[in-house]
Image: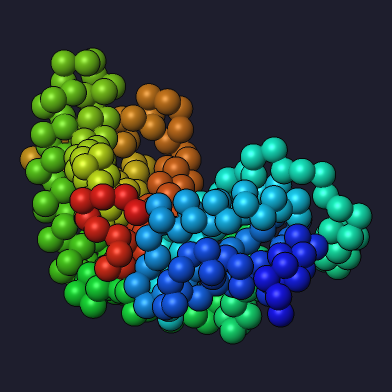
Length: 330
């Protein structure tokens, strides 16, 4: 085919002709160019053994489009991807500068392409080998996406998340007044002893803010301490550590829920003996909510469950090798 004929086909919106001309413009034999025209947007996928250089690719593609005076699309979306990967390493979108009026033939072709409803994303249409597995909102996940996710997981990090997930699955049911009195869950009792240090410190710290906060400060502090540590990790972009610390926050909510549900019965052994004030008996009585101790305790417990589940999912996600503990990844 003559070069002039190839240019004419490209200006009419022929995807193969556009891909051929762009391949010539990029001038890299190891680079594969695939093109898809959808919704007045020209999608261009560049694949190579190594991720294509973004600056060079954008410059040469834009230069080629300007020289050809394309009128087939007003927006260009460029993808750079390594061979074998399911998702692009980089994506660049730009508008064509003063695109000339489209020819009747180009407008007819565009209308024909927009007529059928598209069930897959443009990038998936360029790479039809990826089979959709499930869709959440505007995100479609494929078998390649799931495979790449599994391959990117750090085994040591995942193993620790699994341990925490198993503890949450089988240990959460131990956080009741009855099981606490039995003391059969050694992990729960050990964690309670650790949390008790912050609980008692909270009473001391909040003693300067009145009687109500003085009493509330114990339970408040044992939740705020791990929450503050988690916040520190997230602030410094240590995502994996922050996600796992949220499990500790949730566990403290479970621990507090036991104390709340004992507000009426007051059968739990307290540090200091029977003469010591029961925190939540005083707090709920002061708020005229003493008869709602079971309801409030259960609400705090299930809040901890939701937070624990979210922390486990976040831990799995942050276990990917590509997501460093010291930086966010897009």
